[in-house]
Length: 71
Image (cartoon, rainbow, N blue to C red; front, side, top):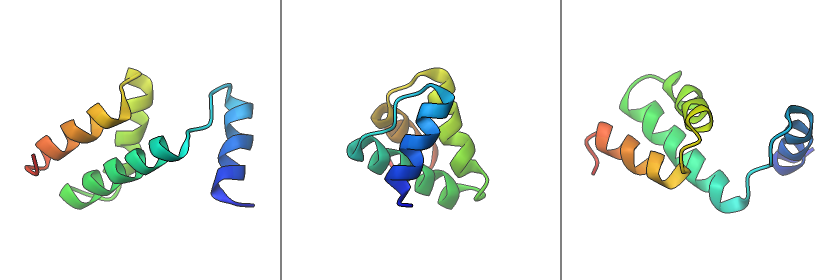
């Protein structure tokens, strides 16, 4: 099963839309910034916070880069 297939099946079960390719890339970049700027556990939790807040992933990535001192 590919990541996209798994995400589609998971999305169906939790009642959320599966992310498109651009959203996936942005969230993976956000996870990378979070993990490298602090501890690895920050990566999934930062992505969770984006979902809970209903934040735009690109806006969240920009904010993460600011927190990390990258932007």
